Image 1 (tube, rainbow, N blue to C red):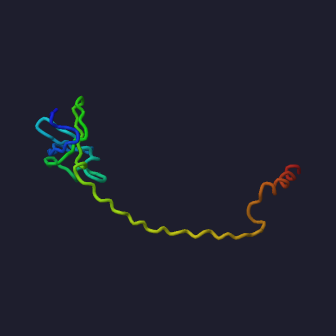
Image 2 (cartoon, one colour):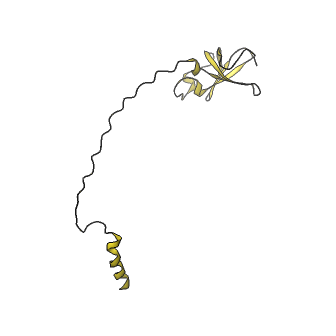
Length: 126
């Protein structure tokens, strides 16, 4: 690997290959790195082909260098300014009316166990 490439440096490279998971970028004649799909731009990228194609010149920031594996992690997103976050306007929610309580001492509805217990005892003995 080239000695001049350091983590944090910004380099201009050329896209040499595009895969569903990212793009390979040649940094010089002997060195190539990968821009993962999550590092292409700010926001969600569904199809990397909408952003990059082979032959594109891009500015990339070196995120990581793995000498043993011979891999260099790159980011295009890190060279761009983050878009301003738009303030989301919340729509007021419609409030549901509280249920109307009707107090009624009618015999309808559920009886408590205490009320029914004596009745059940009488039925079981019959």
